[in-house]
Image 1 (cartoon, rainbow, N blue to C red):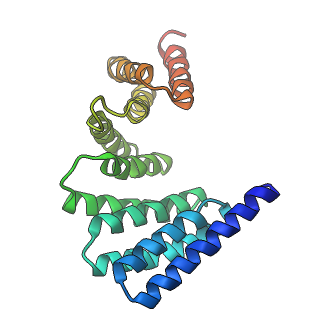
Image 2: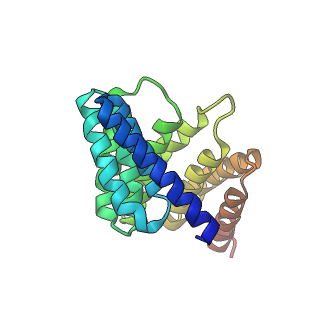
Length: 214
């Protein structure tokens, strides 16, 4: 952070801490949990704040569980997992991602972006841990869920999921399956305005061509 960003960060942090204190003084549990969640969202931005963010998120998750708000609990747990992943604690990240997804499986009534994201994150971590079969199943589900987000689907999510399934097929030497998923990845990328998505699909194209056309 530069000096200006640091000043803004600490102002926002101080304000968020005050909101937690005010909520605790009023004794409204939902207000407390929401204020803790907002505080965690600020703390997690700089790397040095992530461990404290996890402590704050854990308090929020416990209250959401007491209040029988499983999807709020799932959201918080997924972000604890994200912080663990950033810190390189992959097994811990996997545990929190799995817990979050389990809550969505049990309680969600909507195929929305949060549910799709809850599938995506364990797909990523299981791939990083070498659990390719589990990862592939989750990426296929994530592909289908991102396809239903909004009126036309979320192109970035669809493209990323299909791209990873293409990579798995390339690594397995299955050209037919790689063709199938890369066609979907390319189509979704064309619908996306995200430069990182375009770059990733271009990288996958090079891998495809090196494997099957080299």
